[in-house]
Image (cartoon, rainbow, N blue to C red):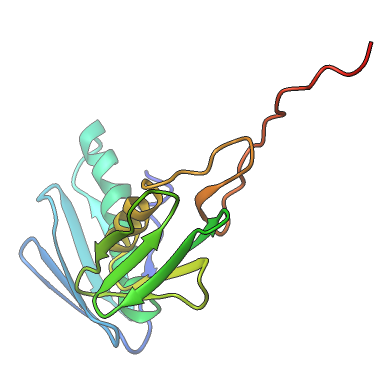
Length: 181
């Protein structure tokens, strides 16, 4: 049995779940998420926990077992606590600023870059070199932060670029200038 799939998902008091057919709806204080799941998987809700099980031991069923358990766990976490990604801009003149529903980023190009902030995400800029992205849908938070990071990935020589706050950039040694012989 799947090591991830066999673990029950505990529900906080603020989260309500409804299972009907092949649809799971999770409602919490931050929002509401739905998921259509495969008919090879059974999802049961009892005693403030969710149990995900599979109907057979086929390879595909084993793969889906852990997948849907992880997706439902992320839904529960998202509507109760939420997800957050923090991006740091490293480099001289690299700045970020929120203007209404747009995010303005200057990262060394001749022009500023504007990003439309998607619905359901909360983007803040506590200072000019930090971007904090919060939301209840894990995939949306990750996709938007990856899109911003892709504009100027950190380079290995000086470390300039947009990086995640917990990312470690592997640094390379530069050219060694020949000294006096």
